[in-house]
Length: 278
Image 1 (cartoon, rainbow, N blue to C red):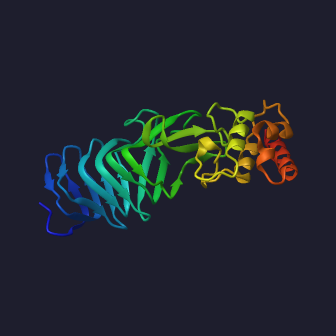
Image 2 (tube, rainbow, N blue to C red):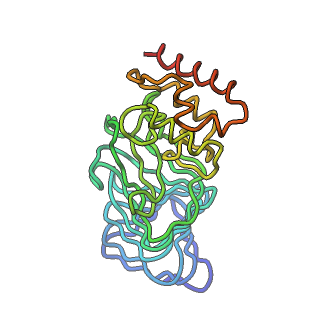
Image 3 (tube, rainbow, N blue to C red):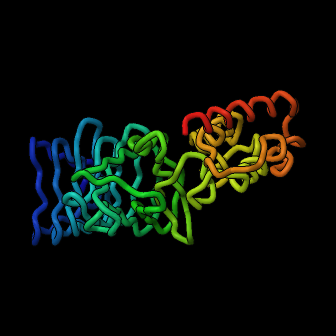
């Protein structure tokens, strides 16, 4: 039993093996490389705390009945796998590692299920393994939660290639958490084309904050703006037939942008660059 204020386990390797039972009623700080195996029981009213510089690996099938506070590095599964925890708080120093090796949950990619609240900050690090390369439209439900507070400050590894991004979507399709969808940059509606429909989405949200990919925020800075318009233009589908001026009018951008003539020239130039690249 771990109680009576903050307890500390420090070792190069700490393992909670199947069949072991640990009651954690205060903060338990694990310093070093810690592995929690399927069948290990960690329960109580306390928290498992991963300090900066330490690693916690929730192996495939691990189920932790207490909250985890991640200030260090945390990974899920056994390349890949599924783990369940009661609650998660990841601070700005924390890093969550997720591996993708296919499209099947648990055997193809890592998944973390948070029963109660997932409080998110810090970094999500996405890694492709075993030679896997996602196709457009592939979906990866990497995190689900009862409720979610905040977002990751940074997501690394989602720019797979110049023409493929793992677009992050929070609370998508009635699931609270985070899903990644492989998409062509600029494809806001995930139909495999970058065309006037996507331009219309971008136009409807132009200069808006708190945006996601679905709202035209293709560089994931939280705002749909000229930078995202440039990404859309550079990836304009070769079958697109609307001119930039027509597209701006259809998207309503001329009413939203203070200098429409300047922006029209900009859009025309980025669309020309997109065509030349093909």
